[in-house]
Length: 163
Image (tube, rainbow, N blue to C red):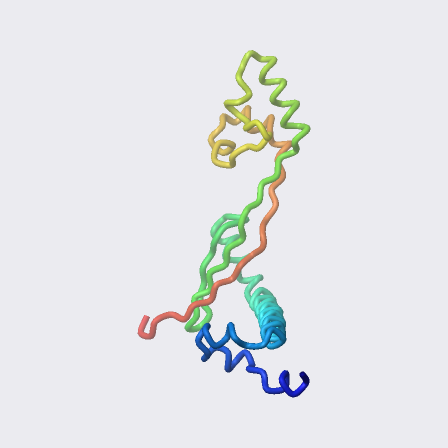
């Protein structure tokens, strides 16, 4: 069997084979090709993470400055580095304290209002609704609200020549 495995196709050659030829390969070859493909995918992901980390280190301070100049803590900013446009997105992740929301819902109900007008059954508060509420309601809910950021992403794209 060792001789049979030594002449197995590689990932590079398998790309050129029609599926009909791949399905008749020995099961051992398919198992090894599958393992090779997983290993290549894992290696590519590690390489992508390494490159993304380098990009983040290079542009993080510029992104912070661009966000500060735009007067925002989260969201998308754009800037240029030579012939490259850098788009940096820092998403906002809102979390709500469930116990506090439950208490507030009961307080609203006790004031003869319908808590369903302010909170969803799972005690989640849609961010759009929260920002549209009257100030007195927002202030009451604020202690139950935590703003976190998601993972910052960087997208680099070459600008067209002549621009």
